Image (cartoon, rainbow, N blue to C red; front, side):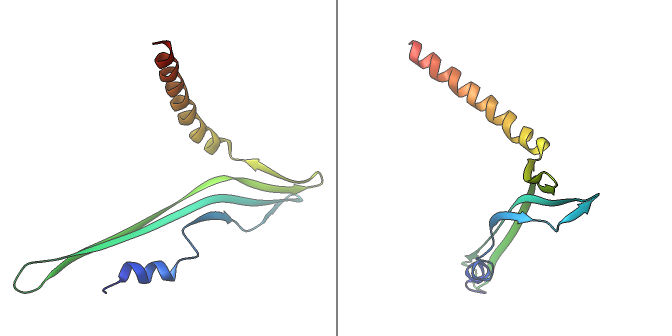
Length: 112
C-alpha cells in the first residue's frame, strides 16, 4: 500500500479525460451517435503518525463527470454534428458574463 496512488494511476493511464461515443441508435431511418465529454480523477494520501504504536492515517477518493455535448446524426442529408443547446448555454452564459465583467474592468483601467 506504499504507492497505491501510483499503482492506480498506472492501471488507468489511458483514461482520465476524453470524448465518449455512445452506441448508435436508429430512429425512423436516422442514425444517432451520442457524444459526451467525460473526465474523472483520483487522489489519496497518508500521514505517518508519531504515535508509539506506529499507526498510519490515510485516505483517498475519486469522482467523475460526463457532460453531453451533442450527437452525430446520419440521414439522407449526410453526416452532421448537432450540439446539445442546453450544455452550450450552460457553458456560454457564465463565460459571456465573466468576459463582459473583464472587458468593463479593462475599459475602466484604460480611462484612468
